[in-house]
Image (cartoon, rainbow over all chains, first blue to last red; front, side):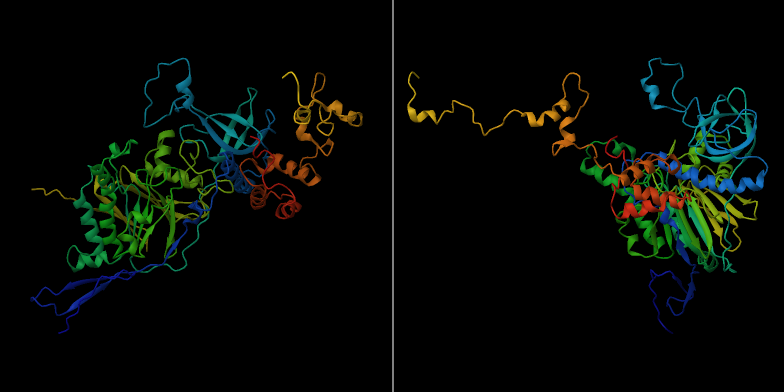
Length: 462
Length: 121
């Protein structure tokens, strides 16, 4: 009998070994091959290494956004209401029906303003609510280069829209100088490209977010169970067979939680310095195990040691000395866009949707996600209430090609839905819950875009 | 000192040298009206005078004038914080049809690469 020992290789194809349980000798070794998929990164537009800051203001990115969206909307308007003239805000005439295209601005009474700190009259409004700044008196304004006009009417609900969305409005100017909106046109879902080779076998992508290594909430055993499952160290052949169908792992942000007390700017004692790096080291140990077996993408989140403003740049590879040895380990930007076997997957670590939740109303996270796709902009509230880099030549958050899968990390609960577009586009929306709270990860089947969850529990119920 | 030795006379100059700085002679009377004084409204005088005549050109040739018009044109978006060539390329990419000659001017470096307001704001 051959005595074969196989080392778990770092290449994309990795093998599971399990010795036959009968007898003490390792006489036969059966190998389960992990499935593979072709990967293509589309993150180039989110990288800012080539950008130079030359003192520009945010007017540049708003101009780029308005122009790109307006060109698109002008082409859609000719099919929407072909007989209504299009004009600019300054060209509005009272009583004349026309279509105007511009950026929405929502005037919010409760939106925290830095000038409030300097105002002489201290009003009775107490501490700012963190969860939502909406107020019944909020109103919308439409702006383009020539001017701005206050929007009236009941068609456009201020609770749905946020500052930064570019829309086309059909209506007319009233005597009071407002623009009475009769109808609104959003850009709608972007055109979608069908994947050329549709996979005929089941291949799974695992989405995790909110691991929060180092936090008091996180349970290291829970995450280790997940790692063991993915790498095939858990369960019998059947379970390993299931794990062998996992072709990719995406970690969508908030993978570490550095103790807040250490980040107040004071000098750290030597014992505290080691506490600073422990969460990342703990994460690296687990990531090394995953990367040894399957391609893994790690995205930064709001709590991770990355830059604050979007697009967040990839976590420094030197934070992960163990995992970076593997070519399967990829540190990616937030937002992250890539293609697996031609299936286009786009997602963020949650900041874009969390900001929408603060400034608008929706049923659930999926509804906000749907809105961003229909507005063709990943994060319309940038740079108004969500930090972003002042790009001059482009707005990288514009969605030019509709993804097949759109995910958002660090949400409160799991949710998923298929969104259908007007031109037959199909998008699988995934809201990934925080792993440290729920122990849940989301598994997507690339063949049919179906989703299910995997839960890991460490409590032994009697 | 009551008496000054004769060889000290050359040591301590008692008269001004005629070869030193002199008052402006009548041949330069034409520039007197440019002296900032009561009744004159010219400021930052010295910067403007070179070679004896006011130098009001200051990058102000035809090409630079055209580029200033390009900077000020609202259709191409804000100009601050961008190189003129980058703004031209952005305008091109957004389909705004900026004048093609400008690209040549900017690449040949016949005009300033930064916008008119750069460094002034």
